[in-house]
Image (cartoon, rainbow, N blue to C red; front, side):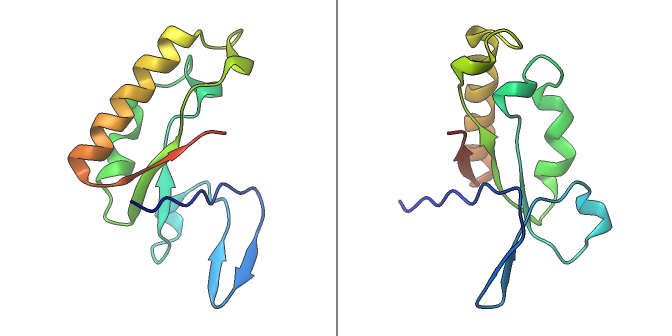
Length: 102
């Protein structure tokens, strides 16, 4: 299995491919994207909040997701772990890649 992390907060153009962060996939119908619940947001969102995005044919991966001790004050590791495992299961069901948090 080959995994690539394209986590970005900037625009980068190489060989006709544009990699950038987008905030509204519906506004960009020709754009492929990833969507996931970052550990920092584990207290504010649930996996259910992402179901519509993950069902979109343009969603090619689930992520960024993972565990991060830096956000324990925001979301404890137990909640982070539960959300990560739920996202991993959904990624397997939908045969989509998982993009992990670093």
